[in-house]
Image (tube, rainbow, N blue to C red; front, side):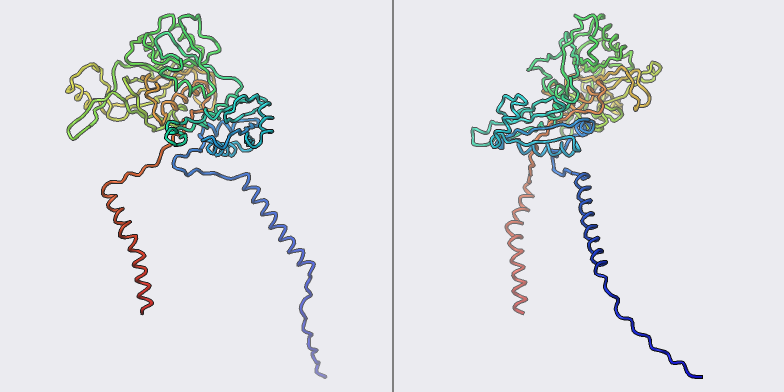
Length: 501
């Protein structure tokens, strides 16, 4: 049998390179990379986050403005007419950038330099009937427009100009002014706040003791209307909220009837009491609602030396977070100057009448309520202080009648805010941090059923100051005169030694 010879297999040569297939793969990869690049950039352009890490957060928008912008349905157009020589031009530009970001395509901004683009500026001036040469913004919303001048957005100190210095911005109020103008345009009409007069309350004149408070509230798209109960048969139906600030005389029986009728018709009341005034009828009305105004004064002994103490009647208090009014002021401290009395809340007694009471403000630990507040007997006061210093003392509360137990359900209800101090909102008592204004703003907006809005305080410039003690100066002197010259000398000596070896 013949041996079968095996034919050697031919070695297979290299496969033919399919150039068209490779070219198509490369083209597909390039297209895919370009598509991913465009997609990533598009997503990043529409969905990005901004953070403000500056020390004073000058341009960070408040929660009030962010919620307001989120609720705008239409488009807001802002025209920027600012000269480069205006001290706050850069501040306003940076602030408008934050508005544009927070508005999420609801804010359109056009920058027009009146000095360089005269024709465009004249066209818009004629359209919006601008008759001033001052730098300003024009806000346009659904055919309605409003101007915000540079003078409304900042407090400028020009006292140093006589010495060759430029104007200095002491307080930037850009957000306050712009958001107020936006609210005015979007809401269409101003809310009205009835201001009760006739009992020696602070007047609403320009030089009033509450002029800062008045201006601040008016910037919330709210106007004041004087209300003299003595001349009325009933509180006007268009007034949903009234404000009573420190009456020095009690309301008459007729006026109290008007106030009770207003409350029974889901009225809203903001009441600031002066403890030094005797108002038994007004106190009786509050007692019916579960809030007893005590005849006392809050005091505290403060240590001024090793064995020296001083008695003060100015109350350091903090805000509680159980109410929409103060939930953004929780644990914030504020000073209540002058006399302040305590409030006793009795929620259990009025619960059957569907009345809910929330404490808003409490004095800090260490304060005591003194009933014999006219005495000069320091020994007695110190004994009372030791006995009552651990008592929780409430000085502000909110009362609501007819509200739903579920906060998500909005129903008509009567609302009242009471504070046993009327001096803390006066011009001479408002501090730079503006806690009083924020609280009043929250109270008024809650009474007007605008819980989503709170006040915006001006941004106060806070210069960074370094204070060096004598020891610090001595250490700094050693660093500058010895250690800093010594470092290059040591490095040079090491290099010289290495080269020598």
